[in-house]
Length: 263
Image (cartoon, rainbow, N blue to C red; front, side, top):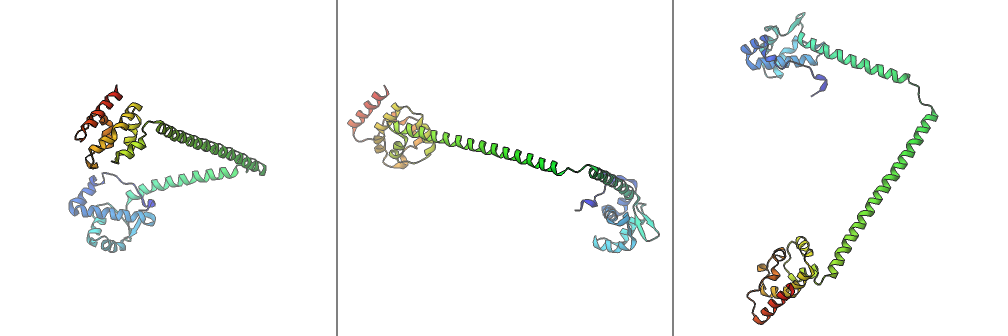
């Protein structure tokens, strides 16, 4: 839709007395015909249209010439000029207000334009000075931004390096590192979560896990029946009695070992 085809109209136009007679006799089709004609007038020069256009408009908008002529002639909604043109006083009045506003805005714009033309033009020296100042400001800003970005990147790299070194040192220093536990346990599930849990364990707990993990794995030869690593660690399953293990003497040794390490 073209913005320059806009025009104002009342939101309660349907309640106007003339419009109510129109709707009473021609229904909402007549109401629609009225607005088709008004929109057509809005697009025409001088906001008036030739009466010869009525049959063409009727065919184009799927109505009859008789209905369009009735809307134009019978309800005092349009005016006829020299039996050649029809127009709407209401539309012309509204458009006159809009046209006046446009003229006023145009006059103000021209006034500003002329005022700006009267301002003294900057000399070559002033322009050169402004250009040099702008270049210096941009150069300083670029240097500052580059320094800030480099400093930030360096800090991130150092932090990441320290984090990895800390993890590596902790893992290497441990009596039983998470990597060793993960490799021995064999059931690979939720490594990230399991590692977080494992890193919170004491060295004493890790020692017990190291001493008992082989027996637990032997007691659950089918991996699908083995606990998930996170479950094993969260429930401190290394402290549980290992059942269904064939060698009772070894089981008793295991129990004594667990009790000794926990005491």
